[in-house]
Image (cartoon, rainbow over all chains, first blue to last red; front, side, top):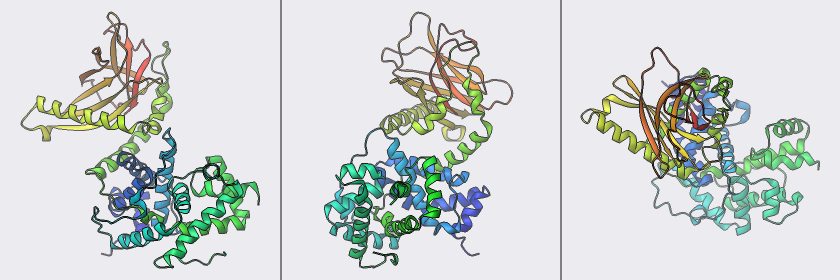
Length: 190
Length: 251
């Protein structure tokens, strides 16, 4: 029997098929956990995020449909939103530190079984390390810390109207630096 | 550019309120520029999750996560939250609905949570060893463990665990940093089914403000325990709570 794809499993999960949820869990555990960890930098919190994400999946509180793009992208976005929410619930401001490991990482201490992820990760990290500090920082704050538009404008001392452009520029530079290798197509207007 | 367009970043990050989100989604329908910018953001950030360094998930996480998913589901169907508001009719009781918020609040102190978990795990282990050193694994199982949340902004905390041992159910409660008692006062533990409280052991704290009690839950008939609560009582004979809820949690 062919392996069920993510969307098939998702449909089964909506029909309260526990086995399907378990399969989805296995498929995404490492990626979602690592992504959550990357955002909150705390193992316990990352596990709480996993719990919330799978509760949302099980209860259908977050609804996926084909028009939302790839299931994996949707799930990653849902995870990121959950993680950002958890960060915001923490009373303290997320402390920002540009972790050396985040920009350039030797991979010595992690055994990576998903080849695609590993390759992508290396290319990406190299590309990120080529960005200016300010640009690395704005991507970190915006994407990984979920800092609000207003906060970013304060933090970077930018007028509100400039923030979007700066983020876009940083992301564009990243894309250029990736040399379109392994990246997504980009037909949008510059 | 309209003011609404300025909400794009916050929408993308999921940090708008529910109301703002609905409004922004309506705005998206009519603003092509925002739709395009959103699409572009999604494309440009699509690979970023893969920047994450592969982390080894903690042992047993799958079991814990899935157990909580399925448990949470059951809880949702069985529990009538409104009923939990009212622990007793006459007494001014801190509302137990606050325990519903505990789900949202439990990330506040991860270090505390970790400490509680460890102490709880230790407790269960000891408990199992004492009760039957030979076949602990077969006979004792953890039904549910929760963190107790203080009713007011107090420093106290605690944990409660329902254990099944040889078909008998035990409630193990452990608290820390509760106020000292006067005279005959005791802390009384209650199991709540709907709005009906059942006595479930009492204790007095030690000088450090820590206390614990293990209670065999042996009420006739089928019970679905919705919550556990601790009140401060004048003595250990209260059949219904007379004092305020000090700590509580949904089950």
